[in-house]
Image (cartoon, rainbow, N blue to C red; front, top):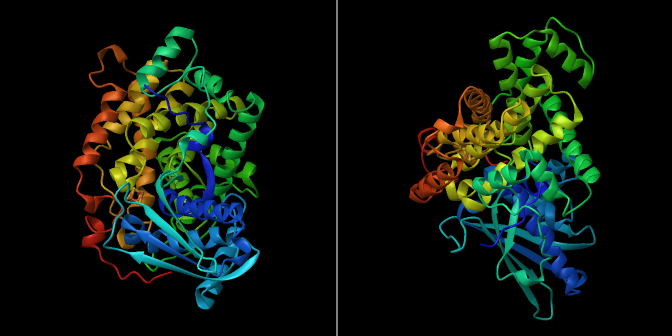
Length: 471
Ligand code: SF4
């Protein structure tokens, strides 16, 4: 059976909110389309680009910022480095003028069209770029944003891709366990051996610490930003007030003194519960505001892993660079198994594929970090997903706000509970394996009505039709 090589940096990507499949993926597709124009030496003579959005990208594209993402991509902006505070003014200018500067080089006409009742056959998240390059030359390319910021080009020649041979090829959790048992390595060690096929161990560690740095900054920003989220749903940010309440006894003036202030509050159960929620709320409020986040494994679910890792660091004595990188390596491997055997796209599998997967990733990583065996870590991942099975995606107004932001708090708490359950149990007596729950999640995804797959046409989105004013 062929083994798809997915790196930890495919699962954790620095980007811009609010959605990995509807914002980050389409943004990257636009950057790839620019590359095509460059390769064909047509960029300088391009006169206009029209972007056609289909299926789920059309239905929830407004709320998820798909139009903004493709326009920013066509401007040549990189989602990893763009100054997120400039996005709103730049888009306002483009939308009022109907013009943009393609790849920061050539002014062209640009438009984004939403085909709400049409879907492309390969995947619900399809988009086509049409460029008019004069002299009757037209270039068109279709892409699919398949979840977690991954993008596939239609009719792409895969034989040109560089093949990575991994020492420990893994498709299923059984494969992962097999390599652990055969070598005596822990999960994070097996994953690191595979990462060495891409780059040096030192580079992987540094890259993971950069990921954690972005997560930390996002949490800190989210805890110190107040007001209403954009999009017209009038959702009030809550991390600001919660952070203020929880730190009222202890002063601080930067990230490190903030962490000390959190620690000084003690270990009371409710206090810890409030903080885990606060960390998750902070990340997803930033995500909903087009802020800089880490896709983990998606943007809608970006708060779960930082909240659980921060819980480990502050309340379980995990403040150590080695421990942090190990946590992220193990979490990423679980996410990549879900991607290979099922999906991490809400347009394919509903919210179980986003919050469910992130909770499962966090549960395994926390269990291993707290001294659990490899089998206990996989058991924790199974428990976390088992209790997200069937969860639908029904974001009100097509925005990644309600129920999304609170769902991250739930995903984080379920991950911690799943980890504790696994640590207190023997996997010998477990009746459900991780592979079986992944299969069940995929079966459930296939049976799920399309209304509950990131269309905003069912569930809460239907029953709470609060007037969405377009951003
Ligand atoms: S409901 Fe879940 S899957 Fe859907 S947009 Fe919100 S977080 Fe993502």
